[in-house]
Image (cartoon, rainbow over the protein chains, first blue to last red):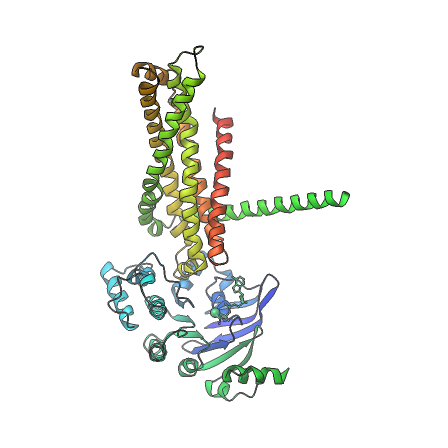
Amino acid sequence: MIRLRGVHKAFGEKAVLNGFDLDVPRGATVALIGASGAGKSVVLKHIVGLLAADRGSVSVDGREVAELDQQALYALRRSVGYVFQFAALFDSMTLAHNVEMGLRRIPGLSRRDIRRRAAECLELVDLGGLGDRYPAEISGGQRKRAGIARAIATRPRYLLYDEPTTGLDPVTTTVIGRLILRLREEMGATGLVVTHDLGTAYEVADSMAFLHEGRVRAHGAPSEIRISGDPVVRSFIEGAPELMETMA
Amino acid sequence: MAGKTLDFVGATGRAALRFAATVGEWGVLMQDTIRGLRAVRIWGKLVFEQMMRIGVASVPIALFIAAFTGIVLALQASYTFTGAVPVYLVGSLVGKTMIIELGPVLTGLALAGRVGASIAAELGTMRVTEQIDALETMAYDPAAYLVLPRVLAGAVMFPAVTLLASALGIVAGWLTAIQLLDMSTPEFVRGLETFFVPFDVVFSVIKSFSFGLAVTSLGCFFGFRTRGGAAGVGRAATSAVVASSMVILVFDAFWAAVLL
Ligand SMILES: Nc1ncnc2c1ncn2[C@@H]1O[C@H](COP(=O)(O)OP(=O)(O)OP(=O)(O)O)[C@@H](O)[C@H]1O
Ligand SMILES: [Mg+2]
């Protein structure tokens, strides 16, 4: 279970999170939506300790992330798969090597197992056969999918997806949405999906949280968010800035 | 007037504080790197590749510089020594200077440009494209995975390249002496031997070892703290080269003061 309570985070003068609360219960998939620049990626980085909160608590399985020593932090990170917004593939390595990186950190896996599992993961995101390519040699959407393959390779208990479907064509978007659902069913992974793609959010999430001005402005099942009467939420899901203005 | 003086004092103070803070951050990175030594499984396999990239690939430029330095040293020594000083001392001057000063320092400065900039740019790009974050999320300690192999390779390869360069510089000086200066080989060798002490080589190794540590660790340091896209990567590379060149010159004076 991932739990954030009263998280404050500022970069210099700029406050990004301002008393942010979120629970991701075990086995659930939560979608975090919000405008560009709202701080969604910043939230994900707190969960794996890439950023430290100025104030407030971030815990995974009941343990404060900020208080973990290096060993424990790496143990936590091994149980989390992180899909970066811009893939963040290691550009000096082939796709297969990228996917293998996480697997090499698991004790007791033979070379052959590592290679086989990496190939399976690439297959799962329709990149079978492209394992020998370098990140610079594939398209943006393919890179995104390779990033997903890399994140799921170790079969982590938690999966954090930062915009898994942005920039993908509609068919691939659906494929990725289904993949997220399937990973959850097969591996029982707990998921936090950051997205502005509402279609994917409605499809994969048990609940949705809407991040606005550093806090969760609205929280609920997709069916509830969809019919929310809050003008800020309505403005976001209808893509209608006028609605915000009528409120102001 | 008083206002201006205060401004100046304030600015100097702030610069000094910033400098101290930067040195502190570098120290933290080095601490992490030393702690990373335990994780041999992460860095062990990467050192060889870095030795190739940092050391072997730098041999041509180092040899090029050393050869011309050796030639110039021989010519200028003979020009300076007209009549009053025995000519075989050209050999002494070439040997001594190549081994204890110009070999290590010129090689160090050349590699500061070549190696320092390339490390800073590579790691800086990894930083701004979140590849370093990705490493961390995959439970790789970036200090062990990225910094250690480079620093170890630098510590080993700078002395190796330096010794090679010094040797070639002496050979170039010798060829110059016998071809252009009417000296004989025995004369040149006599000069070489007269003032040579084995400690000179140790001194050269100590110096270039410290230069290797400085250039690679500063390259990693400035790469790691890169912010802000392509321009940031450029700034990181520049800072790495400037800082490591300055540190090389300071270390050079330091070792001369302490060990000679
Ligand atoms: N390392 C950092 N240093 C300084 N500012 C940062 C840093 N990371 C994020 N920010 C700032 O925090 C704010 C939120 O960034 P974040 O990347 O979380 O937005 P986001 O909600 O993910 O947006 P998008 O949907 O466009 O990805 C931005 O204004 C950004 O400038
Ligand atoms: Mg983002």
